[in-house]
Image (cartoon, rainbow, N blue to C red):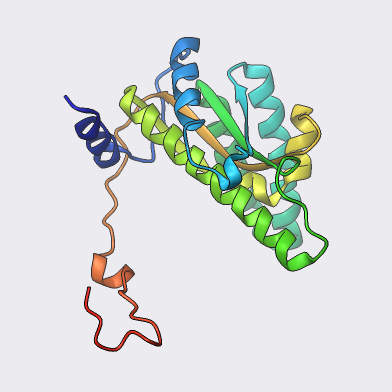
Amino acid sequence: MTVEANLGSAIGQRRSVRRYLPGPIEQAVLERILLAATQAPSAHNRQPWRFAVLDKASAKEALAAAMGQRLRQDRTADGDDPQAIEADVARSYARLTEAPAVILICADMRDMDQYPDERRRNAEYLMAVQSTAMAAQNLLLAATQEGLGACVMCAPVFCPDVVIDALGLPDGWQPQMLITLGNRGTNGKHRTRLPLKAVVTWPRGKLGEGLTR
């Protein structure tokens, strides 16, 4: 099978899988997935992505407990139903601790361009986040090709300080998302996609009269 066929298969088969079979993932498999992530394009080729691999119960439990506490605080402040809050916290804890491996994806701005004005600083940060997200997509497709299930959790953006403290991350690492990984306990659900006509336009521009695509 060609590389193109493999890629098309991985894209078509990728699902958000939240339940996994017990058992570790081989380190060689994790390293292949991470290597694929690092092949993504990035702004200025600065490669701002950083990865923390949690494959030990102690690390996953520490992170899940800390994030759960912040979730409880936030939702309590919102005035939500206490039973619903505890169910949400328990669900989040289980998703993190029951996955054989969890990869935290971070962005690091230290090698990105620096600007004196906020407009360009914000643009540079967004470029780093976009680069990191492209690495995450590579990681998801590589995991699918390895026969693993995976799911993205964006909760770290709500509590980056908690994540940094719970894991003792290096200076400059800014948490963006978590990806749970494991051998599939379910196949995940196929989600329908919007048709192209709902998400695509072909702008001609202000001087585009008479142009055709």
